[in-house]
Image 1 (cartoon, one colour):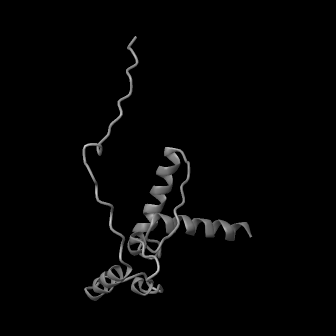
Image 2 (cartoon, rainbow, N blue to C red):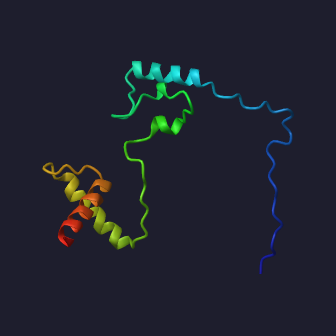
Image 3 (cartoon, one colour):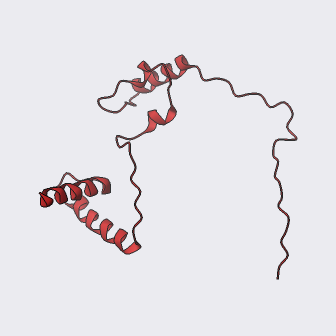
Length: 118
């Protein structure tokens, strides 16, 4: 049997004296950066107010997020995942459908289920 070794505490900052505190973010500087980014072609989501007008709390994640805002995690078997992705791929390749993502495929299937149920 192997002996149980004692844990090691790693300390990376004890030898660094007087670390400066991180400066506060200036909302006006951030807003100016957003305006400059929009001038060179970066645009915010359609239907949203430009981030430059929101001088309250500007979160970097808000500036990077996609149109989809909610994530759905499911516990399924590997076989079920392969089946769902294979069927979704057929829809994604079909140019006559408006489905462009696996998420849109799942929403479409749920809509079909609702129609069939009624």
